[in-house]
Length: 475
Ligand code: SF4
Image (cartoon, rainbow, N blue to C red; front, side, top):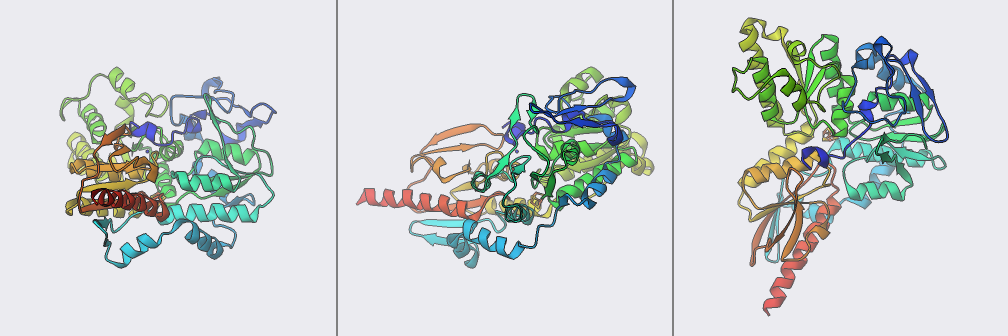
């Protein structure tokens, strides 16, 4: 999901809007130039006024005063809200089948995920591509278009992180809200419009804006993501700080943070170790420093007024659903051990809370990738949007194994049989020569949870073409 963060379709506005301290005190005015939100925070300080304001925190501490669960419940019962589609599921899935599936991938599946074409043997990961949450989101978006043929349809973000599917949304005249230097611009959205929330959800503040604007909300948020929101709401209710394993600028994590109370976002085990070392006063590995250094290090990844001396006494683990699942588990165990060490084994449950929020689809795709890289392959192609977090972790698994691996979002990244342009898991763009070995080869291939099989097919066809050209050149 770039460093990991900028890769991840950055949501600049969301939680940082600081829009409301309580729903009842919020006043939203629409003007021809921009939506403006006027609200007061505790202590009478005025929150950032324009709805498009920028900020440093993924979410503000105003959520302490908002019953986010109740807000979501009320919203979901309203007549302007839909999260189940409009009764066209079968028809839309058939249409998606035509647009996104692949005969070539079907052949691979029918042959135990391995097949040889000419001098290329392809091994396909046994779990790959569209997850059900993504398929469901795209299907509901298609249904919304059919249900509202005349209305303006908006997306608060890319429906999923895949250029092919997003282009399809554009073709259906479903527009994405633009992001200016001040954040997301809701000003063009008018009463009566239809606004689709993507598979990875939307922040509380965005939902509040849309609710106030009285638009039709079509919520495609994956239930796994909602499950994480429920978890951080439980943390908040029990006055635990949420430690979120994720990337602070990723839309899903921005949304999750907006439903949390106190929170800190750790992008990997290294950052989590730093946090635990701080909790233990430097007695874990000595990696942490002073309070000021702590606050500087996590300045974009903590709730407002976060105090590490006060807010790390009781913690709960949550995650961005697409993170490396082994790492989320490791962070959870580290936090638990830290609390045991600090407060005694018998008191650990008073200081640490854990729920399983790792999404099955992420888990299955990562497990399949571990298996694929253990197999004998000459190289691995990882197919998926360059802003897709789950795809970046598939690439990471191959890199950890030191297998030549190329994360590409379209077939055209294979510039020729001699040169390829790809990304590394942290988002660095690389071009490489002589990437394709000569002679018979075995290629491993997988695709991220938001990648249609059709894109995998197009990648393979281009690969076959290069290998055919190689043979012809020898004649
Ligand atoms: S990867 Fe998991 S959480 Fe994300 S959309 Fe798919 S099923 Fe849902």
